Amino acid sequence: MTAPIGAHELPRAFEVWRPELVDDGAGGQDVEYVEVGQVRGRVSQPTAAERVVAMQAGAEHTAAVYLHPSADVRRGDELRGDGDTFRIKATITPSEPVYLRADCERIESEPPNDES
Image (cartoon, rainbow, N blue to C red; front, side):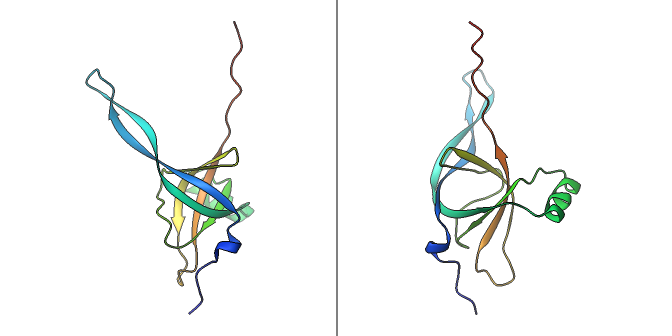
């Protein structure tokens, strides 16, 4: 059996933010992201074939983030670190659980609108 991916192979630190429903004070609910932990990972660009498969499934796949196989992440979570935000679209573990791959969409922030 192969050993799980080592910390030296996961150079980036990410905060894990999970969507949570909260009362909006008017009888409804809003979604807020709450920090639930930290993980280390490595970001790779997806291949053209991986992007096609993601598009067929109705998802945007702009990055693959490799994590330790025991990382507590799930679909819908956001990985935030070094000015980047990645929203997890799916997680995949190979037949030998040496890593956890999170197929993600990179979320780019927009500059503030300065129309004052």
